[in-house]
Length: 135
Image (tube, rainbow, N blue to C red):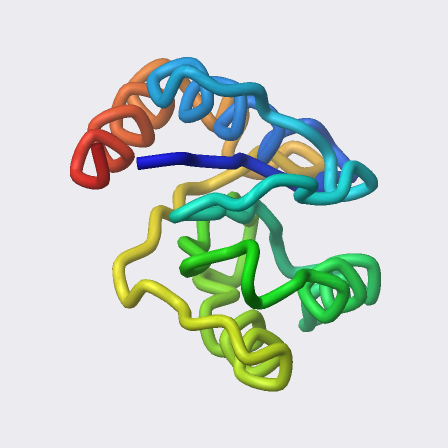
């Protein structure tokens, strides 16, 4: 299996998850400004809610993916308030013609004093356990 990990973050929380996951998968965690240049079986895509939606940069990244290079997308992320971005990302992935894995990983992220210290060590360990399912 060939993996790629890309993330979008404004606070650094999702980057921390991405790095832990990528380390377990033996690849690099890169920001979405880095295109997926080679064929991968699974793209782990980290993101969060910003103003009750995914960021337009995440949408544009997914739409820029070449469907013959990405087998499927696995969603993950952090958030202080809202939970999963799955439905929003899936709607864009459907337009791009790329399937989404139903399983995803989500945990709390610290934001303006809410959920202080999150993602914490337990969250990072849970993210690592999550990606082991795909190896």
